[in-house]
Image 1 (cartoon, rainbow, N blue to C red):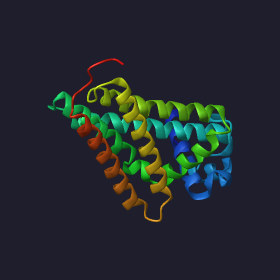
Image 2: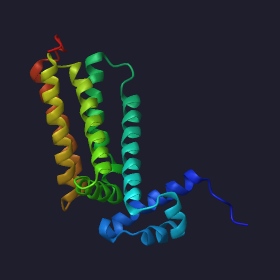
Image 3: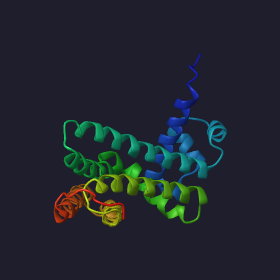
Image 4: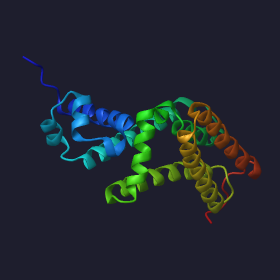
Length: 211
């Protein structure tokens, strides 16, 4: 008798198959049938768990967002022990960059799903909401660390906005380049260099007001 898999495991397999289908066929070529074939799961069972291709895409994006969050927390824990406040804040900023350019964000399945997600977010309220969550999370993480290093809140806001734009822009350019691996390495270094230049420009003064 075949072993019945737990529901969470089934859903994970379907999400992974969705990512693979988008990698192989693009969003327009991805169907419940292509996902079913890749997952080795019946169309009926996929419909039971998710109900539609749109819900599958949303679940795939949530999976990538969770990977990003988990990777960032792991990176924070691995780098901050024993550092001073200023050094810890700088390392957190570098960790944010490293996580956004990490190998799991560069994979074909992840990168093509992100590209599809951004394109579809303009037409889907739920995907648009997920995009806003992602953007707010990135900006909030950057702002938290910049506030420990820069003299005013506005300075920190400006630096966080610029860094977030650089991360998103460089990620997109790297993904679409003919040599993505080299471009991702260069992009990570460009973002870290910008962060260090901003910090050096204020002399590691730390925030002195709440303006």
